Image (cartoon, rainbow, N blue to C red; front, side):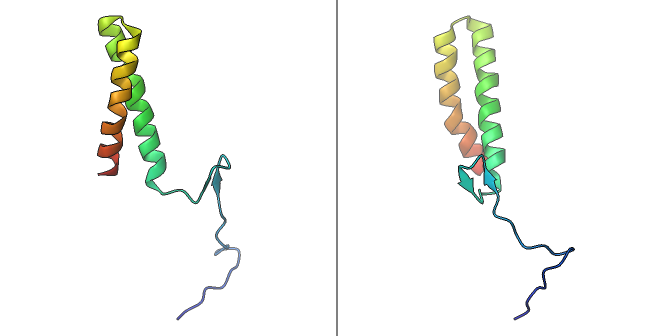
Length: 74
């Protein structure tokens, strides 16, 4: 078993926190979050632009979130 020596070129790992909520989040967490938010916003804008009904746009945008998460995780 080899050990690594910590120096300027090989610093120790830091425990990073995302807004103090998550400690060492999964690498795909950021991509999934951005994908989910983008899908929600674009679906909301499209449906509201076509129909002019805010409640319908919000409901259909909420329905798009699970599909976005499933596609991102897959």
